[in-house]
Figure 1 (spheres, one colour):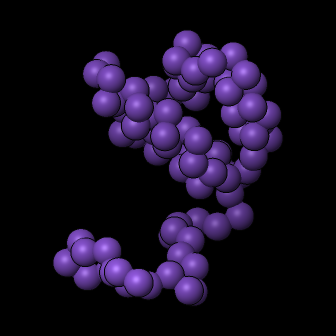
Figure 2 (cartoon, one colour):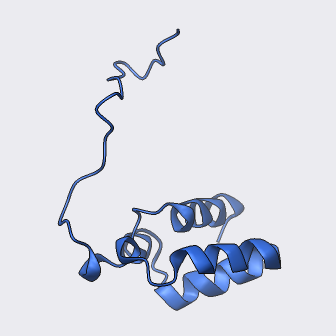
Amino acid sequence: MTDREIDRIIEMAWEDRTTFDAIQFQFGLKEQEVINLMRREMKPSSFKMWRKRVQGRATKHEAKRAFIKGRFKCSRQRNISNNKISKR
């Protein structure tokens, strides 16, 4: 794996709504392999904090989710057109 792929997997693993199934679909890594990657690539304290967050979290497991599909979007979030960030 490239450093860029590893960084993306770590980023996805930290996101609350990204499931382990999505990581497996995109990168071919099962949940235990993601855990091992996180343990190997992170500082011990960061890994412990991540494991505490993820353990028992229903949103990380597609079968345990209360919702089927969709992404959360805040009602106050603005639409961005043409990939430009609006300036305040």
